[in-house]
Each structure stands twice: as structure tokens, then as C-alpha cells.
Length: 66
Image 1 (cartoon, rainbow, N blue to C red):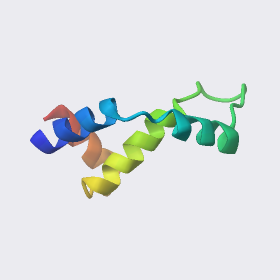
Image 2: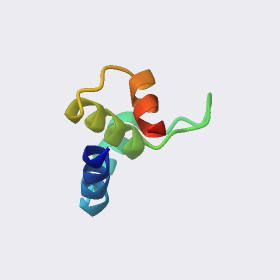
Image 3: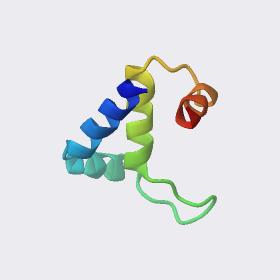
Image 4: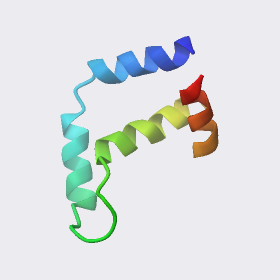
């Protein structure tokens, strides 16, 4: 679990404002459909999955609970 905390701390320390701007330009915000999710949060999740070699969201949720 130390790996997860280290990555979390790393994400907290990073200035990802530029990433958020790129994501907003690329994907925008649609006001219809389901409740909008944070594009930056989705980016961090996908990056974490790749770094931690997590295959799917079920495995990610299992690691969150531990």
C-alpha cells in the first residue's frame, strides 16, 4: 500500500493545471447525460492504473479498500 500512498503524494505535489486545460479543450463539458466527472480525476486514475499495472476498475477498487 506504500506504493499507492507514494503515488497519491506525487499527484498532490504536481501542478496538473496544463493537463486539465488540454482535457477541457479536447473533451469539453456536455451538460446532458450523467453527472459530469472530473476529467483530471479520470486522468489521474488512468495514469495510476498504468503505473501500478492494474488491469481493470474492479482491481482498482479492491486496492482502494485495502
